[in-house]
Length: 131
Figure 1 (spheres, rainbow, N blue to C red):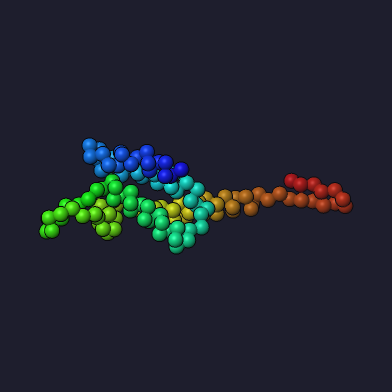
Figure 2: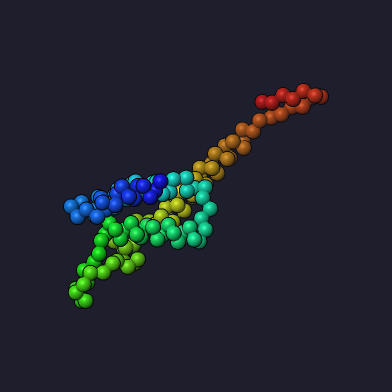
């Protein structure tokens, strides 16, 4: 499903008439939300984290485009450090961690609420009465 999103936005990300700021906003609202859907319950392996980081950097490189190097007088792609410095947003992995912590807090809060309201079971002979 995510691949379809990327293919739809591929021309959008290459368009020179659209600002980088708008492209990054679209990436953050559409692609990140699709990518991190239900990520609270994921078990991320080292390989998964690596693949997510690679994908995110690939999208950022497409959005930000090449950089002209005045010293060597040629175009080059951005390094990872340059990408993270220019985007100034949490990475996908950091966003997933924040989602998981938010979800854990929600579960912890509701877990205490429901534990205090457990049903009481009375047993008298063969009859059970639950309240």
